[in-house]
Length: 299
Ligand code: G1P
Image: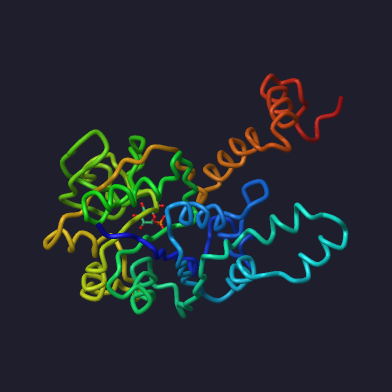
């Protein structure tokens, strides 16, 4: 039974959807309430047994390294002020058994290229790929569910969810036959097809557990017009040689790469957040009932 200890976090991409917020700071550091997206992704990976975190970073992303590094100043100041709990919270961002490794991707040349940047560090091991702008909630955490499926079948596993009618063009889409309620034996995967060309309504949700054979297929890809290499066609090419499964995870996905998904995550998480859920829930109910005047309205 193969274990999965390594995960790749491609974080070099330039964001256009959250400008100007992301002009000088990484989109992966956008907080949902009080925790950046990248930390949710890392926590999910660590819960799945991952101990080697490989970040594929780029210019302007150094703050991600700082976030997972020790901060003597912050810890010192918090302790000096008697804020022991906060000092421990800050200290626990990176568990002691976990290693963070940073690889620079000089140009953002696609998800496949980012994954290729990790090849030397991955070697012959299976590994996860985690896209932090997909915030996934599940119990057990989604990547843990996928590692379980991976270990059971010894096959690459792609996390998928059923999308709405017009969702194909925003996702990689898998086609194939259901083996059981949640596991699909993949026969094709297409990146953002036109709705009429989509092989199914199951879209890739930013989580993969892959066999290292994918690197051969990534290397064999012909780069796109701007030199970009995508992951989806490499996985499609892998299907000629080995079985790949899609797993319809138990949980919920927030597409925090879009404003709408980010807002939905913020509201849902706020309604459960131990500090603010009561007050926020009460405010939201009032707002929905129309009791709160719109901003700028005079009474
Ligand atoms: C990437 C993948 C796509 C997947 C999506 C999930 O696309 O290429 O297959 O469905 O993530 O978020 P992106 O959102 O980076 O355009």
